[in-house]
Image 1 (cartoon, rainbow over the protein chains, first blue to last red):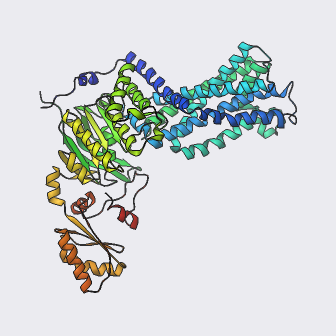
Image 2 (cartoon, rainbow over the protein chains, first blue to last red; image 1 turned 90 degrees about the vertical axis):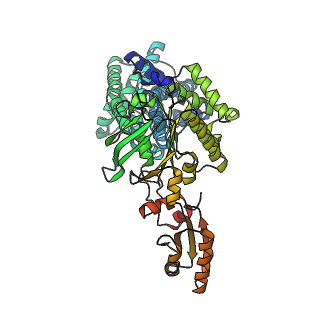
Image 3 (cartoon, chains in turn purple, yellow; image 1 turned 135 degrees about the vertical axis):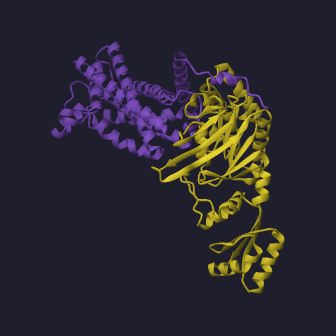
Length: 272
Length: 338
């Protein structure tokens, strides 16, 4: 007669609610650590990921900047809030590609057979994507200051703008993780996200005033979330009436999380 | 009170692709604690689906399964604390080091941080990975990766382990090592469910074997009884073209224990005495003036046992990324590589 290991009795005991929440939180941190540890092992990945938005800053600042009119004040001050939003938007591609990669490689299968909280796979990922995007924004801000960007309001307002930016970044991660869960292949995730991102970032107030666009496009460009977040950040960093823009941007961010997070969790639970 | 069975599956069914593919079709078996169950079957037989259901990553359409008396659906959370999973489906993180991977799994198995670290060191030592502990997995060889994969399954010292084709594609040395480790675990009281396409592997490790096809058990017994019943040598003769192969098949039919099969230019048959049948085949073909391009004698593979049992070759796995078409010449050749 073989005997079971002593741990066996502990394994059978169901977890209490508090214990479950504590472990779900711990699991989230462990999964977030997983991505950040990989990032530290491969710091080039951040640098290379930052090259494209950095080139955009330089191009808009020095190539298109002179030709773009209709902006009050300095163009670089107008541009940088748009660049910040563009950076986190494109940075979210990682959420889709990474999620698809985890499914493709089979690590999700291992996670699903572990006693960890299932939600942690998503909460941990969105948390680490947020951290990575925060690093990119700091890099972009540094470059911005180097090419003449100056805060026109005050530091607390600027930081509040970054706060909205981070909230927006987090809400996007849920949506892009959902795309990764649906397409399940890194290549598809890559090509599926770009066509979504381009119209939202460029048909927006990120780089040029929406009033310069044709009427039919204005209707979209004015009201879509990227523009709303850009407007809020711009108001907080470059000046102008703030409260309306900030509330609209916050509503968009929270609304996106409220819709996308449950969809992503549901999809993850169904992912075989 | 009688101890519960380590693994019990009762009439499990699972269909994919909206019911068009029946991966499991009434699979039932029992495994007592401290033993190895070998699950034999070709790609697409339902082995991986069964492992996924038993390891709680997939829910069956109907039927019931328990691990140490815990229901895999109702008590899934408790089941996850009693099992370890290794093999073709469960991966490790490529972007982390070996040590980081093991520590992460320890933490996700809800060990204290210090315990997870200590356990990672023990396993790195045990599997000879201490020197490579800080290196990224991208630099690991296939064998090292598989050792880490096995170590990952053992982090929480689970009493029940699932190894899904653990040695497919491994070099002979690492395969031997995997077998030695598995034997040691079983001596220490662990129950192992091992899926494999290799009769030899089941022969070495398993106390009990089930042969699975089309999602159900078609034969069961100890490796010895199964081999005695179904293990015959295979004779493969390659001819110049299909008409010659068909002529040869008709000519050689009396030598085989079963009707010869013709695939393209190759005649395949089961024989009792390999060398004797081989030389007789050559003489008979020579006498008829049929040119022989090649002749191979092969020890029985699982596919041969399978052919004996069902009268047909294995069918491609619907869930596999690269289903091997049985009609193509490449797949025919690959069956001989062991």
